[in-house]
Length: 261
Image 1 (cartoon, rainbow, N blue to C red):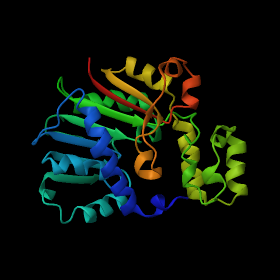
Image 2: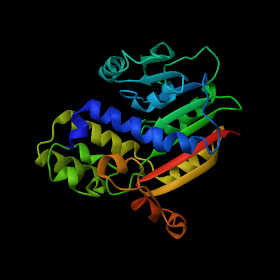
Image 3: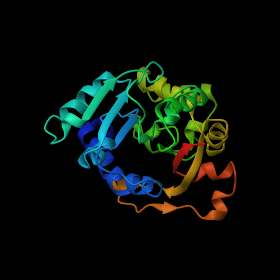
Image 4: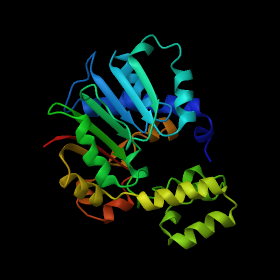
């Protein structure tokens, strides 16, 4: 396990940096981020992705099922100058009801690959959107070297071992158990295996949803790797990006902005 997975303040600051430098400029290819806009982040964790929006005096709402992360987020924002513009809720997104109009921007960074029933979820997003809403997705394709999020393993070897999450489920579980990973982590990683998302499946879900993809970029080096490892983001070559199914094994992150059809 890397330090960033246990030091949540460090993880928070990494989110802030990547969203400020890469996510907001990416969104602004389609929609300028302005003061007073309403921003929803689903699966916000400690809500580091929301800080650059809050710094611009947007009205921000973060939702996450993990109560402890939401409580930590409240601590991180306790002294923020615009904290009154921020709401943080611990809630199951499938149960959340928003009755105050729709959002200008919806953000899901490294979230959609964790949620079950992704088709249902993306269709539900339509309730939070209008014709001017932009939705930002960022996720690692399941088949990429660390698409199973195995970097969170306690075992030094497993946390650095690429592709082993692609083993059949029984072998994958057995490997995690042999290395004495705690049961809660094994359950979490197996759940990710169940919900893991390829680019092709994501595109198919979007085709059958109320949304259309306006702009997308596939990265060979994830923008977040700059703050994590000092590596500059690199977009994949077009010839690689055109190789359906095979591209999932090399693309470490897909950035995408969508709007209602």
